[in-house]
Image (cartoon, rainbow, N blue to C red):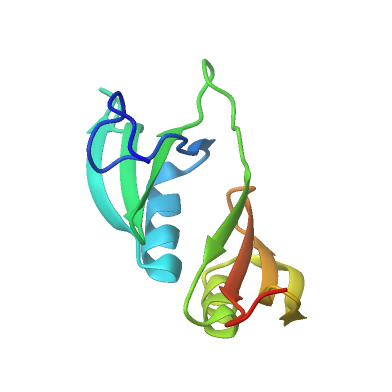
Length: 130
């Protein structure tokens, strides 16, 4: 069901992460999850004031942590085509393991904590989940 008040290309609820080193976080999202940058606005000092990326049709908003806005990491659940490969990419890009991928009733799933404080639950769904 579409909401008339939600702009096209956005979803009703969108994560907004305030992270240290937002520019490097955007690189991590692109390298691990194939994120496509949609928008970037920098402050006068060059730090990211607001950025948006799209991952599989979902929008994620990002800003640089600073004295006015402290870091606000999150726990995120992401569907991917290959949980094992994505988990390994995340580790290669500096994430640490929270849980190695394993078979669950709902699919193959593992977890990582990225270098910016966010936890990602990486899952490829079972064909016939319970």
